[in-house]
Image 1 (tube, rainbow, N blue to C red):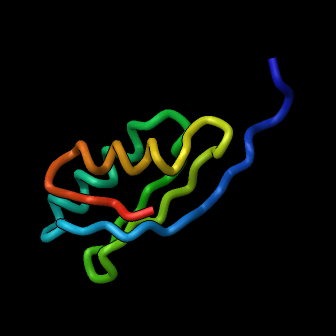
Image 2 (cartoon, one colour):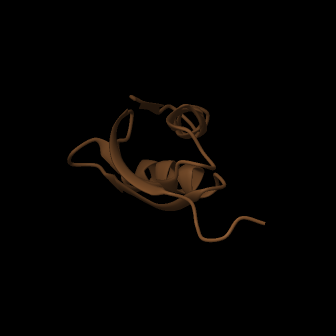
Length: 77
């Protein structure tokens, strides 16, 4: 087993399609369900989501797929 933790990265991604608090929660929950994601905080005002994730466990493409498959949302890389 590897010693220590992976490299945590914090990145902001644009998300289209979020219209309400329910949408915000859907996007956050979709990302939090992905292994390797520590935090996800969406902003309706800025139409984006800030994600803190272990880049050794998850890729931006996997994050995008989680959001894109969670409803009428599309995350830009």
